[in-house]
Length: 123
Length: 197
Ligand SMILES: Nc1nc2c(ncn2[C@@H]2O[C@H](COP(=O)(O)OP(=O)(O)O)[C@@H](O)[C@H]2O)c(=O)[nH]1
Ligand SMILES: [Mg+2]
Image (cartoon, rainbow over all chains, first blue to last red):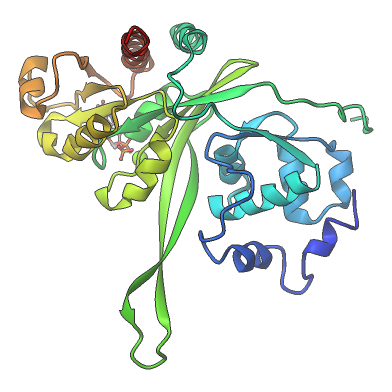
């Protein structure tokens, strides 16, 4: 788990430089169409994250359970575009798997709506 | 805690859905999210970089402007396979690019209205009408504000009779639940109408 991940960073510059340099702001979109509620989950365990570069390790530790891209960004306190790039790197290396929400063109699924309705009533 | 590779076969079968809470600045969007979220409202930042008008006279280099928009949202785990996110929309109209991203794939929206300044929710009503995203109007009853009847508010907002409109208190969990239940039922009716052509 170590090695490869670390090579992504320039030690002197620190882990935050690369995402900004790569993305140049919002112009580079990630390769996976990650959006706010795309769910992600890490494959390595917390222990296995120890050898990874800090920002990647943080994400892996956080994503032991499924959560949305927006949630990852909020919990590690980095802007969304940066988190999308970091997640893309992890997906490319098979450290994270993701699942997109249903296509926007679909009419919402009846069973999903019923489950949401029941869930809200139970709160 | 024991370490190891036990979790290597992790899979991802859960899906996520979202609802939007819209309305003017200070109308109670974050309060409403927080009243039902299982975690205190989370906050993240979207960044938009765009070339600004004109060129820097001295350097000839195009100037870039960066706009940062803060988003508040909450989470409700409906069941292990279904997670509901509630997003508050940015309060200012100049963040339209963010509205598009938020509305993409949303099930529906709540437009919160404050009777002391009803006009602040007009842009949200217009936006959801144009996009065809089902919405309900929640009239947030601030203390000391004159309580209009729902039909007076409906007339002022000029929303269709088919759009549910109800009084609420964004601080109150049961009241927020009532608004969200009304919204989901409205979304279901819309989906059925769409299916029956
Ligand atoms: N009296 C009353 N105050 C409210 C209600 N909803 C929100 N507030 C208050 O109004 C202020 C603005 O609410 P906030 O949720 O931050 O608004 P936002 O800008 O739309 O997210 C806060 O101080 C809330 O406590 C309500 O239903 N009744
Ligand atoms: Mg707010």
